Amino acid sequence: MEVQSAVKDKVEQDKAMALKEETAKTAANTAAKTVKMSGKDVCVYYGEKQALFDVNLDILENSVTSLIGPSGCGKSTFLRCLNRMNDVIDICRVTGEITLEGDDIYDPSLDVVELRARVGMVFQKPNPFPKSIYDNVAYGPRIHGITADRTELDELVESSLQKAGLWNEVKDRVAESGTGLSGGQQQRLCIARAIATKPDVILMDEPCSALDPIATATIEELIDELRANYTIVIVTHSMQQAARVSQRTAFFHLGKIIEEGETTQIFTNPQDEKTQDYITGRFG
Amino acid sequence: MSTEHIVTSYEDELASLDNKIAQMGGLTEHLIADAFDALSKRDAELAVKVISDDDKIDQFELDIEEQAIAMIARRQPMALDLRQIMVAIKITSDLERIGDLGKNMAKRVLSIHSERHPAQLMHGMRSMQELALGQLKDVLDSYAERNTNKALAVWRGDEEIDAIYNSLFRELLTYMMEDPRNIGLCTHLLFCAKNLERIGDHTTNIAENVHYLVLGNPIQEERPKGDKTSQMLVNHDDQD
Image 1 (cartoon, rainbow over the protein chains, first blue to last red):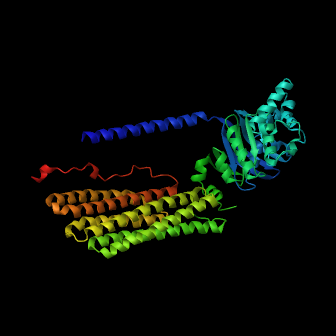
Image 2 (image 1 turned 135 degrees about the horizontal axis):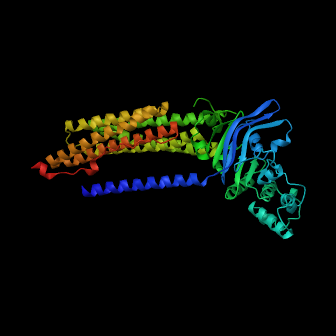
Image 3 (image 1 turned 90 degrees about the vertical axis):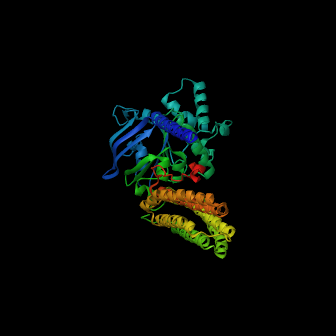
């Protein structure tokens, strides 16, 4: 009988330990995640037509947030609000509040150029400037006056290309034109160009949709590495890609966020039927 | 499950997976019923049939597993579909084990075939078998209907099987102590009882999987554990 009660005690002890560890882990996870950007009651109108309805979303620091949803659901519209790319569309009007580290990015006194240096963007089709690889990356630092002299600029170009995983492939030909690179390389060049202005946040609008699977995998690997130093928001039509690269996922439908949460939860156990129908391919 | 997939062939594959599990479940139910019939009637012929029937169940397991893996590779299932496919793999593995346990009972029929046959011994065994088979049937229904309440009822009901097992264990020990000639038979019956108890456990696993399939989370309660035979001792003083 003594042996039995000893066994029981040990089991209880182990249980208590496991519970303690679990609680500590959860606490550590929540503590590590601070809100980098936040949208509150964001509405967007294109003329008379409303494209976004009261969108609320927190973008967590050093994590990848993916925005998914069918075409025309407003995910790209929301992404473009995050660095005020919608400003260039005359009929576009944004209401609500979007903050970067607590500061309103639609504050009239805010310098938009400065904002776009802090919140960089990578587009669907690789769009390098018709300039040398070097000049593509050096462009941002030059106009923002980030570097003091040529040596510093050289270093920044090299480190940006390195972070974008492109340095080893182009180090002997940085003077050659950026448009001569392959599609995947061009996209990594665009990422290097975005990184060069030392942003806090990188927005990516379907960055892999024009790339083959290998180039896509390289970009996805890069996104995972960049997460350590940057906050990333990615719009993607590939559910598998959202599941692979992101930590958090928001599902948009008809201009509203239907569901937002941890990526694993969204793809294994979504709470909303619309989310489930979309990610399992039950409606288009 | 309200709406259908845009891709019809995907929908068909998921339906065929369910269909195969229903067939495999039906076969397994039959096998357990036959195995017990063979045991209670000492029917060697039926026992041999049970042993060969188990191959069909094994074949179903391979078939369902193969289909599930192919679907994961080709469809990259998500959410409910992913859960259905994962749960299909787990349920078939439990059903296959249940089949094995039935087959094992049938093999024992062949060994005790010529031994004495005390009718009262089979009484407790029968009620245990009826319970276990009822639970298996209910859990398969709960899967087909995606009915979590039914699954939970099965899950909670396993304690009852364990309770009968505990009393059978005592009963069989008593017979063995009464007359050493009973030992051979009773040992085999004890293993059969243990098999039925294990069938109950696999059924409970299936109930847990049905719950996960429908709701996406595991059953929160602590699993009832009623098998206390590991702590039972024969007290020789009682015999004097």
